[in-house]
Length: 485
Image (tube, rainbow, N blue to C red; front, side, top):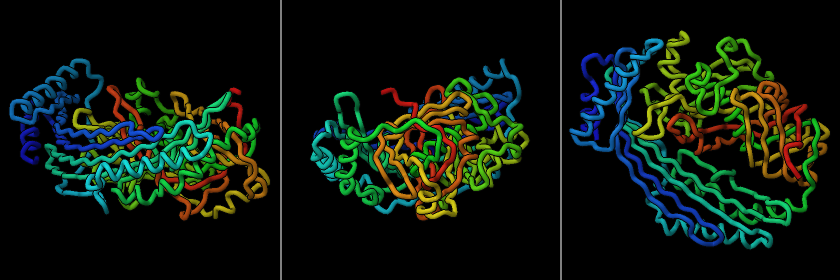
């Protein structure tokens, strides 16, 4: 594979090219699903190709091919240069790159048990047993399970001398029980909605999740929601579980700190950002106990945003985003870092495959654990509403005004769980929400969640991100009002 990558780099280095890099990506993917006791989908995909990126006349050019022979690579190299030179005809400013030292290394993510070595039959047997357990609950009308495993090997070379060989294995699994009533549909998911939990792990993750052991509880909650009290509409204290808080982080911290959104180059897809450059080091983003980081290092955890080097050859880093409530940093590329006068990229450039150009993407954007026990989070106020598991989300194109719905909620009185509530929603403004944070549970309750379906770019790139959080309490939040009865 290294020979192919070297040929691609040679094809890109033509007269007038000031910089070039190549990514040779070999990927294997397996998907399994069940529905109502039957196998839904069993699919396996493999892909091999090379993406070539060049700087010529101060502009980017990119081309890709799955023809890894000499002619295919030469054609892709010529096309990348032609695109860069054509782009220069409409150039607004010349692209400059922040310095980055070359590196030569290989890295393999930890994987205790290769998920591809576990037979499809074994994997389906587990999913079908969960499916069966869900349907034991009278009132469950639809049961769904899923599992996805992925292995990627990427070789990155650039004209500055970097040679990086990375191998990553990710695994995810989960299930959902639906209950169709006379007037509404209720659902409960485990361990999270939209596919479950995903991490940079092997089959050991599936075993850790204890899927079958949780199926009966999840199914009973889905049915019980029909008899639950409608979540009241009020302003009060809100407690979020770590999975819902992970999505809150994703939408109201992760996307706004993407520097390409701030600078306007991502305006055509999902909007820009309220975090304009004048707010850096000046905006009070949250209360004093709010600390958030963007961290791609393995030390942070086995997240979907964990790697050794990004797709520009920049090392994984820990970057302060919010420190003691103050806004401190963006996610950047070599180009955007240089554009705002920073000396180094934060190492967040990634592409979803060999045929996509790298973009600034969330790595692991996490809320650091707090100092409170779980009892203090729940018991610090007389009344609160506790919500679990995302059901819906909406946020404006500046990532400022939002509304979220959850699958289930409970009344909390004097620290004790009371009545179950259905159709819970809450809404707010990003900075007001984070400034209202009163308590964050400690490290014992912190979980690094995987979001496998973050979309960005045109053509769209679907990428996995990670978000660590522990249950937290917020004051003065608008609760309810988002459900149409």
